[in-house]
Image (cartoon, rainbow over all chains, first blue to last red):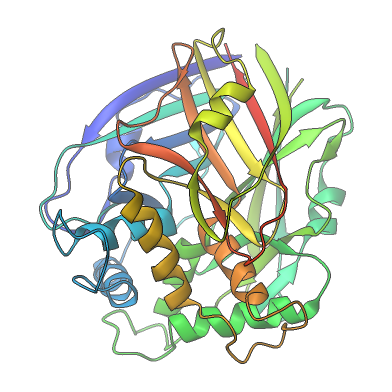
Length: 138
Length: 138
Length: 138
């Protein structure tokens, strides 16, 4: 039974959705896990993680557009002290989630052909974001 | 420590939300796991998995209605080459997620009385969808 | 390899979003797990679990406001026999999800500074809600 963890830091270039698959894969060794799982856990409440299309950049632009249309900045929120983008960022964080589980098979992440791992930065001014990577298996 | 994985293929009869609990249960043996977990991972970006009501079919009809009202087809998306239902399908895939974790207790999935596992097909023309089933425990 | 599970019951004081981090931590011992994971699984289809801000109560008020604005009560749903708050509750349950995975590091939950665990009660009249806590690791 293998169980290992590593904490990494990622930072989005701006508000929006960004591919971090390569960053994750280069941060931890899973080549010795034949059958297992990887968990990615983002330690923040105004950003999120998701899995989506790894090819067309248009998809990432539209993810931002749709999510900010559903939960607009500057609406009449109670929680507004940290800026008009703060409460929508909290909501989006819970809508997409901060924790991903992906199977490991034959020493590799078992993602679909078109799947990539996204960091979703929901604040206007990105900051460093911590991700705990956990892998376990046999 | 038991750790096993299996990949299965499911296909929805049409766009919408469909119960696949029985299909999952008949695809992998968990009777020898006393305390454990099951992960279901859908290897696609325009469909999703969720857990919801296993009795009333009305709930599944309304899940489709509400999600397509929130993220309508044919809106002015940047990503539109693959049809008006494609970008909404990507968004819904991230809203619901593609990875489910369910506890295993005494050799059985520990779902609530009214819980069932749904395959959510967000495209107009369903295709084969791969799900990796992982189970682990003692 | 440690693997243990426990089922607990929680009840929200009313419809809305409530912190249950302390309740979870006091329900199960993880002090002997150096590197591991915790899964929380809610056995219901009209409530949900999420991770969000643990400080400002305003965030929890706004989470309820935004989610009920996105999926309003009493819309023209097919599934309406159990009241105008029932179908929106089902949808929110799938939007936020019923299963959380959090890393355990050095015998403690590895949450971010501002992260707390929420029980989201989506029905007008809260009932007892069962959560299966699973922990595993080395």
